[in-house]
Image (cartoon, rainbow, N blue to C red; front, top):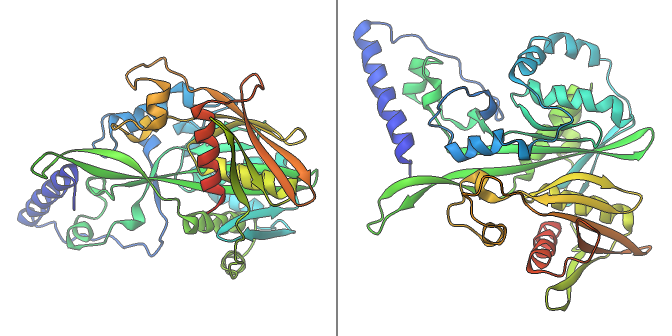
Length: 383
């Protein structure tokens, strides 16, 4: 079912095609792309755009959502695109020692290079793929794209093929994606690269008669295949052939053994038991946080601590106000800042680890929020 906004765009596209036909210039056609991933960044939009609800754009521009190590500007993005040909020529020599590791549907890239050398290339990679960065933190090895639309999902129907790119913006998939990338230093000469995807879909809000009166943006399930597609592209960007990268990413899936279990100790008191050693537990907790609404602002692997904050679902237009919306207060409060937490991973044996939640001061977070954080994290790690 198309939303009212999508129907309006389609209506005007029909009028435009009729006008072209009368003028005798409707014969121009564009060549359809066979690519299944082709993103257009929401951050590239200037001025009002009906494709992006105000709350979605506001959350992207809100300085609370930006790490101050640096932000990719539009001019920086354009410069990166212009030099992409020269950049690719410099990386065609390739990086030796790249391989994919996986656990069930989870994949990550291991590269035998220091993180400091890889970070600029990964940043250029996202810009070349049509994204702007809202988090760009070389000091922590974390970057996050803004919301973007996968234009490859739009069908090449008669109207679109006729008008070509003239009014391409009137077409809309009703879906948006953003990606987090985290570079983990395993050893001085080895880096793990994690890419996680988060999706949103535009849905109708209906009245008592069932008519669609407005739309909101809500979260949609994580898509491991999109993560795999960008891992393959990144490997190609770093010098591996396309065939090698796709074959490595498409390797058979190993069955995932459930490892995480929430253990409740009392009212609002709990921890997570993980049946793996510290290294794998640290990785799984990081991936679980990346795939949820938690932003990792910093981490200390030697002490087993992730410093995180919860990103309220208002950036998806969550008008219903879920648990965290109610917990952190009204959406209308522009000065509201989400509480910060520490997620602590402790080794309790060669094949056992424990996860706790603390407040910003390092004290146990024995509150409904702490219990909910552990619950959500357990669900993510169980996938």
